[in-house]
Image 1 (cartoon, rainbow, N blue to C red):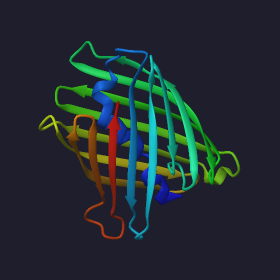
Image 2: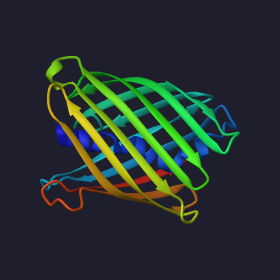
Image 3: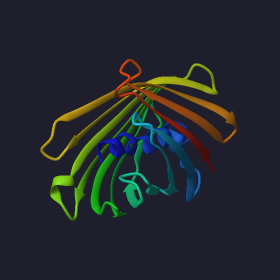
Image 4: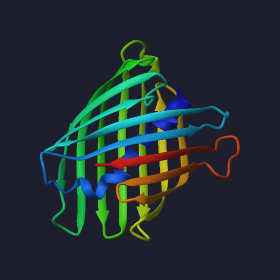
Length: 211
């Protein structure tokens, strides 16, 4: 479960990185849709894929994920977006809740937040998984990402994630990240966690397409 949690947070981070700036502009009923695909390379040599898709209808936010909370697990979220893009510091806050079905069955309350100031971008997501079958499998995680837009198509940054399994110690992973826009609506992202610790380092590569 711990290795799975490493990757849980990737979805929203890459999602927010790819569409955060546009998500504050509400121009139509349905807007800021996206599809994300991820390849996870863990430190034990295992590789697996993960998918996420979602979008907004007015201020209502919905998201569907696969292999996110756990392998062979499908989850569905809904939330409401509060935002303000009329000041120097733009922000968005989305309280949300969802359910996971499959290998993990859980209730999933959570929160996403985005802050933007000029070329600086900060995103964070927090979620607590309440396992419906065994409370010892409950877990908490938070993921935070800080990036700087060097060029319109290039955005490096740092990422930190912390998870806490029920009645267990905390795990903190720190890493480097890079977003690169290679088509008008497509972004490639790469995450390199714990680069100086061979026993813990792992990689995540993602592709985002927004519409």
